[in-house]
Length: 280
Ligand SMILES: [Zn+2]
Image (cartoon, rainbow, N blue to C red):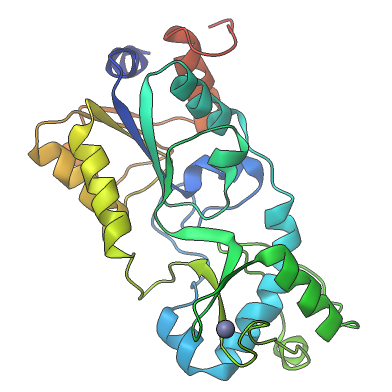
């Protein structure tokens, strides 16, 4: 594959900054918001405005998320995450910027990971600002809802599941266990919310230091990720994209590979001499 040759040259030069999206985690059983085409959104994610202003929306979020959490918490890194960690071990990848909130880069052994949109396994109080673990919240929610049984119909990348209204109405959310009254929110950036400026600045700094930017499994639909591709292109830093389907950054890319990440990335790692040798 000619494009894999070009991608191999890009990565072999080192100084790579990775920008990963939902497409990297689909093979770990966490479905993409937008599907392989990157266009049709199957599920409307929670917005920050609805979450903070509408108690019913908040109850629905926590009821669904309480069910979805076990699936997210049980997800394991796939061959794509492991290949990224191997490229990092080999000294070719400097920083991993991820739009994913599942923690799977870290679980695969990656270091220097900037979690652009936060992490689902941490919970923040909007009143006192304390961070607590999602596992602890899970225990509290279980205690508050001992008889809550519902059938899980499907899980989305934000840990949400589909759930009928009558089951939502029976769910009892809990408030902050530290200040006692504060509203709890997963420590992730919801739609309609801005990423903390210092975090964005760290990402821009990493991109500007990079020899190349490698986009993995993101359709670059939202500006939150696309702005890094635009910045790289403006600075003359080559951009490689591996994604199933077209992306909104293709016009800025030096090389695009349209193929499953769990196949391409281990091959790429083997070609540049990182990780376990594979037959290619
Ligand atoms: Zn609090």
